[in-house]
Length: 273
Image (cartoon, rainbow, N blue to C red; front, top):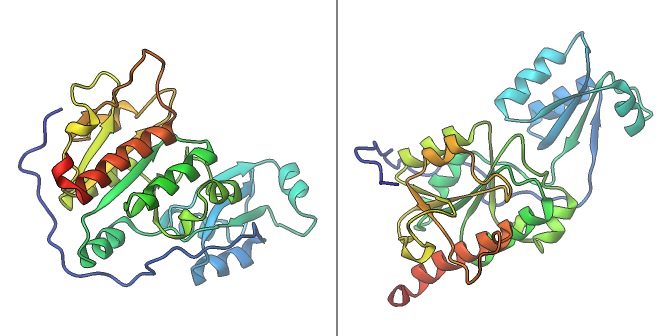
């Protein structure tokens, strides 16, 4: 895939105010009821997901949905039996999971990384649902000096206790960005001069032929379907990881580790490229 030309770049105007490290909690907690959830959302509590009873109506629901849209919080419509099975309290058809991590805004993370004098190196996940893979990828992100993990608000494994355990604590040390649209996130990366790579088994370039010394984001897709075509089309380059056999492919977390190691090697030991 050829590099895009004449792409406008956004000028850096200084860092915005935001917490440089995700807030971590080891306990999975609920917010139960409409008004408690509204108050929590208004105060900035980090919410992983909101469950709303199917066909629920009445006061507060529109406000909750509006908050969820603004904060890219997934909403799942569920039968009342599911909510009743989760709590014996008066849930009013609404229950929310408090998140283990504080999700950050993509532009704020870019600004923060650039302000520190670092070259952005991010990983974007498309359709990766196994939380152990997400945890392992997060560990590689931190170990290889990358700064951020970008995930969609839907269609990805939750960053729950198992993900944190698989990351060996790395999720506490990287920036986690949750977006409503991966395609828009790619556009935002491009506007900031960040090139985007995606894996493709039939690509012409091997991973070690890429230049990771420039601001970069790597898209890793589900092992079965790979990166979705519309998202791959928006990337700047395809790459493949060469293998010694004709076996299917690397596990996604292993593949991400290989790519991140290559990026780290190029940045720390440029003569070895």
